[in-house]
Every structure is written in structure tokens, then in C-alpha cells.
Amino acid sequence: MGTLSFAPILPTKPRPSVFEQNKSPFVSRRRSKKKNLPIVPVARLFGPAIFEASKLKVLFLGVDEKKHPGKLPRTYTLTHSDITSKLTLAISQTINNSQLQGWANKLYRDEVVAEWKKVKGKMSLHVHCHISGGHFLLDLCAGLRYFIFCKELPVVLKAFVHGDGNLLKNYPELQEALVWVYFHSNIPEFNKVECWGPLVEGGSQQGGKKQEILASNWELPHPCPDNCDCCFPPMSLIPWSQELPHQN
Image (tube, rainbow, N blue to C red; front, side, top):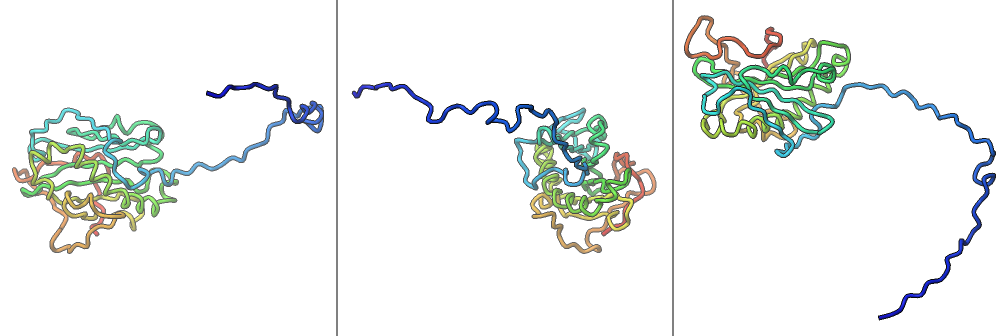
């Protein structure tokens, strides 16, 4: 094996004096002023349109996986965290209001809530998104918010399917249930209802493209006006505006 030899290491250049390091011996303590950047809640809605099961946290709150949603109320509350970049899905009999508290949620309104309904004997999933209304910032970017929600809805539906997988396994016919998406807005252009087809296909649509549908084939279901056994629950579980957006 070779031997190691050590030699003293001398600096190639002498260390500069204080006067050479600073043009003036008096160091300024003044800090540069930073420009105040405006904060606008525009594109915070769920990030990339790619579903990652590892980033989904599911909470079961008072629901039974063996109970059919046509007999026991079942809702979904989906929110997103900017800090952890994770989705939180609460599955419960009513909307999880504690998940919607805090100034950030009230400012951005990027939550998605949904409920299962049985109307005249047929099951369907009704999804609600808040586009605008409440404060002027949401009104300014209503068009962008509508675009982003449509772009991210396949991720939302995949989160529902993955998070409530045992229910869909026990009742596979629910995968063929139609998905109705309600866009709530104070601007008529974005205040609408769209049918995204069967649940099993809604999550596979690329780029938020909904299927071309015929209104005569897929009409928005309306419950019976009187008490009956073919409609459940008798009233909507979504505590939002009951004024129905126009069907697209």
C-alpha cells in the first residue's frame, strides 16, 4: 500500500482586509424593502389532476359499511390541505361541518361535498361545488374556478370510489349510479347542473371532459312531492342553497 505524505497548505492569496471586503468601513444596517405582493385565492384547488391513494385520509364518522345508502344517509366531505398536500375525506350521515371551519376554508371554498340519493327507486350521487358568491374574490375568478373544478372532478370521484371501496364492493350496482354535479354560483353562466355519467366512468374522464349526453336519456331526477318509500332521504343533506341551478 502507498504511504500518505502531508504538506503544509498555504493560502494562495492573503486574506483581504476589512476595508477591502467593504468599500466603506461603516456597514449599513438598512434592509432592502420588499414589494408587497397581492394574495389572491385563485388556483389552490387540489393541485395536479392526479389521484394518489397515499395522500388520501379517510374518516368514517357514524356510518356502517354494511348499510345501503338507500336506507341510511351517506355523505362525503372532501377537503385539501396546502400544508400537507393531502386530501381528507369524511364519510358520515351528514356533512362534516368541523372539517369546513377556519378562515382559509371560508376564503378559498375549495371543498367538495356529496350525498347519495334514492329517487323513485334509482340510486344517484349528487356532488356540490361552490364556484362564486360569498365575497368578491371568488366572483372575480369564477370562470377559472369552474375550469379547475371540472379539471379536478375525476380526482374527486376517484377519491370517493377509493375511500368508500368497501361499500362499492358490497353493493357493486352503485358503481353504475349516475353522478350529478351541482355548480353553485351567483353568476348565471356558471350556476348549473351537469351529468358526469356513471360513477365508475366519471373518474376516468381526462381533463375534466364530461361525456356527451342526451337530456332525454339522463334527466335530473326529482323526488316525489309526497312521502313515499321510493325516495330517500326525504330532504337534501347538503346545507347549501336549495335553489336548483339550471340543468346543462
